[in-house]
Every structure is written in structure tokens, then in C-alpha cells.
Length: 435
Image (cartoon, rainbow, N blue to C red; front, side):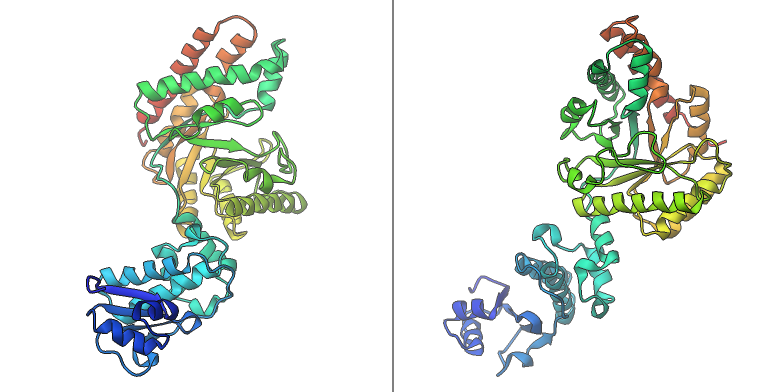
């Protein structure tokens, strides 16, 4: 005991340490042994600090009362309390502030289902303290939940150079048109992966390499890359659906619980903010469903927004679409968008700036565009801070995969052509410059 600078415990723990069931007597016995600061945790009553002499009652210590919350789970409350107190303690903040941190951390954790995963971050804690009396159920507070979600991310992605081959219906149609067995598609996707791995190694894409791959034809691809530090996106939409439907039906939340935590949920929605109200509302409800499912499962969400080809668009269309989703309480970690014009980029950036400073960013899609069009889109993205990279697919692999399905080329040549195409797109991205 004499070796400690700080001793924290419940009244029962103080009784054990001090050899008395009278808390004050136990504290006085401990004070004979050490000059450490004592902190007594008092449950709903908050906590009391005793840096010097022990008074006659606990309330005469430096006492800060806790906030009232619904207790769902006490596991981890002590660790949370200690982490909060130490935040102030190591920064030489007043004892009162140390106690406020500690009480708030404990309150947040006991009001959530979970132990270590429920611990608040600094940002989350400060937000809660600013309005604790108005948050009786931290587990149900949307703002706290979102802050917890975005401030506990596993890693940063400053740049993403992804090869997208999560295509399902397009692959099936191509195989059928080439007279090939659809059962060959998984093997073909394995060849695309080999090309991606080759370029990632040769071009120094460590920490930037990524793929979009599906679980239907690309399950072995996902298994091969999971745990290797790649950016991995995985689709949930039923290909071509408008209104949006999920490929696994309405049990998308249950399905996500079987996915590795590092897999990013990618959801493509063919959406225009001026769609007819019944269609728009139906799609928006589905977008809310997948966002809620991701919040519950802990997966990041990439929302891919493509206005239908037959809809009129201008430089405000994508920005208005993003704003609508934010207004609905949908905060995707990532956006995947058709390459915007400079004016459209300005509008998009203003929307993200105003709504979500924690957004991971935007990745550009390809839509099977030729390299000259990709280059134009990359150049327009130069200097745009929200643009983090690209996820391009058919522009890279469509022609060589078609040749392979027709039997016009072998595995090795197919890998080589896909790798060369991927490398050229990567070079275009790296050489982008504002006009």
C-alpha cells in the first residue's frame, strides 16, 4: 500500500483494504500507511476523493455526484471509471473534473451491452459531458452512437486504389454470351485477384491496395485477402435492382454478423433526388435499413450512388442526393460516386463538410469508361480533399476476361493483361493534376 500514489475502489473494496466494514475507519487505517490519493466509488452517488486527511463522512470529501442512467450491464464499469479518472489525473486536471470524467465513463458503459467495446472515446465522452442530463439512455442516443462508431475505427485509409470485381450479373451475362459455363466465374475471379496482388506488390500499394469482391462468385478471393491489410468492399445489393433490394433478402443484418469485421459493406443504389416520391421513399427506407444494420454489426458502409442513366443530371444532383441521405440520418463511412465535374466536386465537398467531418471519403467508380475518360475524372478530383481514390473494374478486366471465357487466351496471359490495365489506371491516378 505505501507504494501507491492513487488508490481507487468501491466501498466494499476499501473495507477489504482497510480491514473494517466502516468505510471512514477503513480509509483512516489506509491513510496511516500511505499518502496516496483515495477515490471511493459510490455507485449512483458518484464518487468522493480524499487527497489528504480523512473527514467524518464521505460527503465531506471532494464529492461529484453521478448522472442517472438505466443500468443494462455492469461489466467493465470499473475499468471505464478508472480510465476516465486517469484521463484527468495524468493531465493534472482538478479532482472535480477527474471525477466527472470517471462518472461519465462508468455511466456510459453500464448503459450499454458490452464491456471493452462499450468504452467511450475522448470525443464521445466530451460530447456526453456537454449534455449528460439530457441523455438518460446513452445506448439509445443517436449522436453518441455515431461518435462511438466513427471514433473507434480500426485503421486509417489515406488513399485507396481498388480493383473492383464484385460484378455478378455482368459476369454471368458475359459468360453466357461467350458460351462459357457460369461455374468458371469463381476461377476467373481468382485470376483477377492474382493480377491485383501482382500490381500491389510491384507498385508499392501497401496500405492502399483494395478490392471489391462478392461472396457469390468471389468467396475464395475474400478468404484469400482477409487479414492481409487490404481494403475490402463486399456488395449487398441485388444487382440491377431499382428500387433497391438486398441480395440476401431482408435478413441483411443477420448476414452481416457472419462477415469479418474488416469487410466494408458496399451498397449500390440507383438514385436520383428527384425520383418520384413512392420510388424515392422506398429506396430511402432500404438505405436506412442497411445503415442501421451496419451500425448494429460494426461494419463500415460504402454507399454507391449512381443516378439512373435516363435521368437528367447537373452539377448539383449528386450533392443533393448526399444531402438527402444525411437528412435521413444516414452517415456512410464511404461514398462511391461517378467522377464529378469540378463544380459538382465543390457542391459535394460543401455537403460533406457541413454534415460529416468523420467521413472516410469518396472513391471514384469507372462505369467501364475508356482510359481517357478515367483520366479526365481523376484530373477533376485532383486537390479534392474528400477524394481518397478509385474502385475501377470493367475498364480493367472486361476485355481480357471476355477473351479468357471464349478460350482465346490462357490464365497467364489473362493475368498479365489485367495487371497491365490496372497498372495503367493506377498511373493515371498518380499523375492526376487539376486543370
